[in-house]
Length: 419
Ligand code: EPU
Image (cartoon, rainbow, N blue to C red; front, side, top):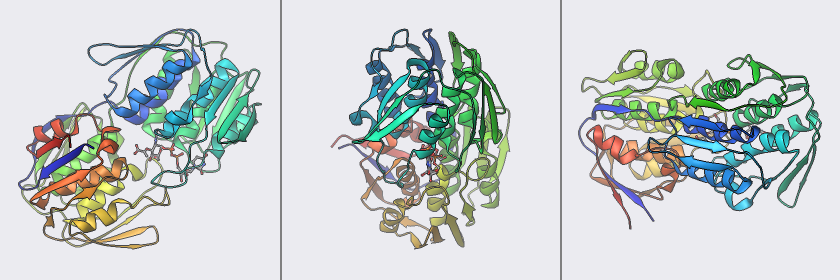
């Protein structure tokens, strides 16, 4: 089992490039199923979840070519299967994103029902209800979603909760439906907008993405297109927090500051000098200890749940008491007991973590439990005395491209143990 060994110590100081966003790449790869013509996607991060999605698309009959610069060419000329098996879905919940495209293009989809996961129950009832409203017949039985449809029909769908992949699935399905689909209470995440940009390049007619109401006029077919994936705002934010918590200076290039308003505001409150350009962000602590900050997670443009664990780590070494309230997932504090092993003073009250900052953390063996929890342990280790070994880092490889190379570039002492 692979591990990361991190020796905490001095401040990070340096510059690093943001990769393309995982959570934009996965739906965009699935969007290739909507057309019999090729989709060329660039700025695709090299991640386990991308490999899993490529395997899934391959099983459905798509041809996939990966070129040297890690662009991905997906050509779903003929679909030979419409089943997403449990073996793949259980390792990556985002496999549910093939449901809408398969149903819209192929008229049938059989997708294993994603179970619960470390961060909560994560049902997909809103995806299913929306597709039923568009005319699909869907049975959920023996752990599978079995869906069939003639041509989907445009309709108005009011989503009961803001759901990112739910919005993406329904938006993709609606591109090939008969007539207009209106999605209300839609997710406004930048990754939804990036998917809409890609779909428009393929010939889809979509308006209102980035707002709570998305309107899609169905077309008969989508065509070949090229798309460059938006920068990863969560990876960007993770490196910036690492800079702040080590009292250092970190510049992230090839990113987009407007995607991180809520996070940058909190880093300024923590005492960071934040500077931005069109495609870069720099934080500088000038050797000062950060101040504790309080955050409440909510759908975009509010503070993202995917940055919550990293702010627990930041508060663990900050001056003062900070609270971190998780409102999106019911069980996203798996990092707390691990941070406590490193000497963090954190108590949990319902969905709020109360974090009392300590001047230093201490190294300890810890275990990654999910993607963002792992990121919080790695950055906490940068501010801990001694060497911390983080076990089960396959979680981090699912979502952070070349994490140890990038952190080493910023001056971190980090190495991978292939034990
Ligand atoms: N929900 C329902 N019913 C549904 C769908 C969602 O009740 O049919 C609930 C969920 O249980 C949750 C809330 O709605 O409480 C929001 O979940 P959402 O559907 O938005 O999450 P998701 O689409 O499964 C995506 C990201 C997550 C990110 C969340 C929230 C992808 C592939 N995943 O998940 O990313 O945390 O949105 O922003 O886009 C990560 O990258 O580490 C990660 C977990």
